[in-house]
Length: 562
Image 1: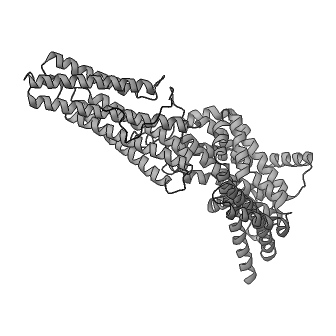
Image 2: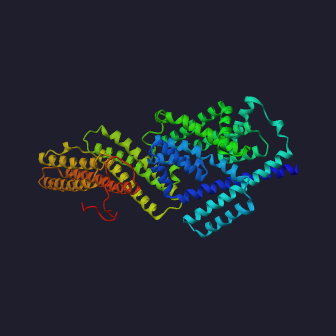
Image 3: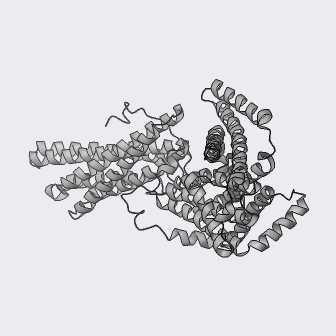
């Protein structure tokens, strides 16, 4: 009994060390990479082939296909890459994750812990402790993680050797198809429980090397572990946006198709693996054979899915539409982009553009004299309010982490833009509810002045649409001045009409108040556009039209003394 407890303790400890190592490697390299992650996934995915290389490379480096998949979901949500481009990253990450098997097979069983891994941990932690919060510290974390990686493999190897000596595992095995599916299930379950296919692969290879399971059984466990990695993507998109669910669905479809094909062609795959191993001069040992098998069947999956990628994209774009794309729900904000402030800024800019579109529509409808618009404006106001709340919650989540000064500055712009958009929506709702209508003023000259003022406001609202081709902030500034001139003119006409008793004084006051509210509504949209233009320029959000950089007006400094 005591020997059995020791073996179980070693298994648990080895697995714990391995998971800690993978976590340190992933976090360290992701933080050390900084802008490189955005560069790799943002610029290297212009074609499916380049996306595959990007996904393969980054997954091989950070040792986590789940981390790359979740990051890809965030990039799609932030509008940096399309769903089609993300497929390449997803496909490539499945090949990249096979690097774990090669590390275990080639190095894991041959590294002397005391002469190699332990110094890595010592040097790595020295860099981590003396590096503060800069790149050197995260490189140190990565180095220490690799040291723990090899120690974890060594402990697992010893544990499985002890398990083989203590327990007759032949009593628990099944033959034929049933046995094959049992081992697939074991591999799947190990990945789900550990949330790491790398851990499941490491356990499988060490078990095969220790003689615990046969080669075919271990191959089935590898296939199951490959399918099990989809559980992380499924968990990541619970309550997430449509795009997040589509990327996760692509990941699941790829892994299921690959697993089915691998199981159906298992003897053929092993023949291919044996021939390839002989050509490459690889050692015919279980760990190396399984590592090569893992690589071969994932490459096969990519070759099968590549020609169908366009159709898969079209299929996925028609799914997850109904609930997700309701106007009142955020389209770009979820937890997958919150992990990266840079991604979050892009997603926030895109979400703010949606709020701006709603506020703009409300403003234009508020200028109408038709009372039927009131119900629609109230509905739009609720939509804008819900989206603004989602933005506020998202920013609060971001602020819980450590942010650079530049990111904090951009978040301040986001908050100011949001405040101005909400103020614009509030003013539009008030204007619509208090709309006296031009019919209350009988003076023809005054009616012309009122009409001109509203037309200038409508023109300004139209020009603030940053999704419009040829958008120019300078044109917005010019239109703001024209609107101000029209406002001053009609105000003077109203005062003269009231003084001359051509318009009743109560009516004059109502119209003056209404015009003032309309002007405030327009100014709030202008200010929001100013911050959105700056944010889009800094965050490099790809939107139709041209967003030009303009000098920043301080919030406390009036745009114009209106």
